[in-house]
Amino acid sequence: MELTTVPTQQVVNEHEVVSSAISNNNNFIEANTQQVTLSHLKQDCIIPVFAKDNENTIPHYEFIDAVRTTVQQLFPEGTVMMPNIRTSHVIKGRTPSAISKSAKDLLEHEKTIYYERMAFMVEIPHIHLYINNQKLNLTVGGVRSYSEQNLYSKKSIEKFKIFIGFKNLVCCNLCIATDGLKDDLRVSSIDELKQKSKELFLTFNQEAQGETMRNMQSYIINQEQFAHLIGKMKLYNHLSKNQKQGLFDLKTTDSQINNILKNYIEDEHFKSDSNGYINLWSLYNLFTDSSKSNYIDNFLSRNCNSYEFVNHLKDALKNHGDNYFLPTQDIVHQQ
Image (cartoon, rainbow, N blue to C red; front, side, top):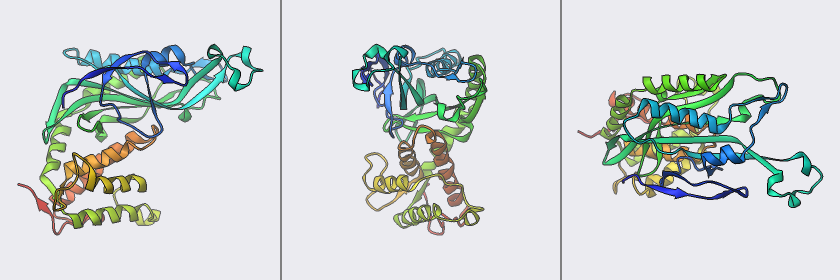
């Protein structure tokens, strides 16, 4: 699949969103989100402040611009796509002049909004790899949630999440490894945010992650093993804290497990073969697809957890060891 760009224009809460060029395959997260543009965030949204001293927070558009600017500096030899931005939990307000009006009578210039939660990704298509004839573009991005910030206090350190990984173009699934995610980045300025982003992007080993994902193709499970895996994953979510000790810290929810089960049969690109066999690369993509149904706050950590879990299964298969989720005595290893 070739990457193409399309103009996007839409109306969000009756505010016109200015066109931008992004990948036309852009649903990297789906749950309770809507797509907006950088210009909409900059022109149409107010900036939350810390209530005790009225100091600005770092607004969403500056966060996005800081990361994209850093990427352009680090990878100047090719194209860096426009950010694909998803938002949720709109916070509505009004100007002081409209304090006595009912909501239905408010004029457009009397309304204010900002988004409590925002996620974005930026593709770097000239840096890519192929796995099973599927193209994966190097991708960076981040998440911001004002719900994790105490806006009723004085100005304090602000929390962000940033990542670097790959996006599978056949399904727009993000592939994020542990060393490509900063899940609790705390900074006090844009300059510090740029510096921390640069550190993550420079230390990320894209070759190592690519090789790890390619190796997933070499391990296959049959239908009985898959059924055992699904059953144990469902059971895991109901174990006590003591019973979970020593087991992999699985973060996949019951609804995600149901999606994985459904797509094992139905997914166009990653379903099992006619005999019920599925390799771990396809299984991994069933997991990353299911993680798109998570809310903005936790989809990055659960996506990363999927990567770690499938590699946990791979290690058990490789070492012929027993595993709570997948007993391995009947493994199939593809040469």
